[in-house]
Length: 156
Image 1 (cartoon, rainbow, N blue to C red):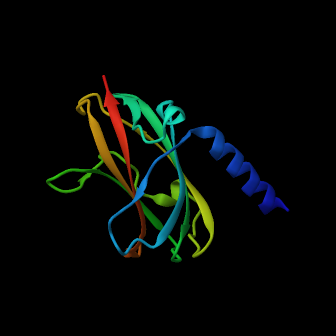
Image 2 (image 1 turned 60 degrees about the horizontal axis):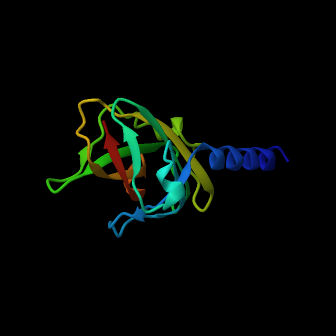
């Protein structure tokens, strides 16, 4: 009963935290998860048309929550965020990569969970639209991972 109440509470809080946004699965054919929904707060643009990127002011914080079902077991997880560019994926500096701080560990195969993290954008980042790649992997076996891409627009 406690587990059921915990799950219901988590789903309720998660759904109230941000707007559901459009995302896509990474092109990596090795992606071993289902990403059910991605939410960003603040993102009032998603309410109008979830194809619009979320507008986030430089120097401000935003939060992301995503619901996933892993296709692997992991005692410890690693979370990574990248800005995708023509030169390659650039890591989002200053992010805590200990996924167990943001999702319940151990990660169990075929168990639906939520990952919740707050991040801060730097004032020095350019104001433009970015493709952001989120990756959650098995810290002991990086070939086992979840991955999705979303767009954000950093504004002045």
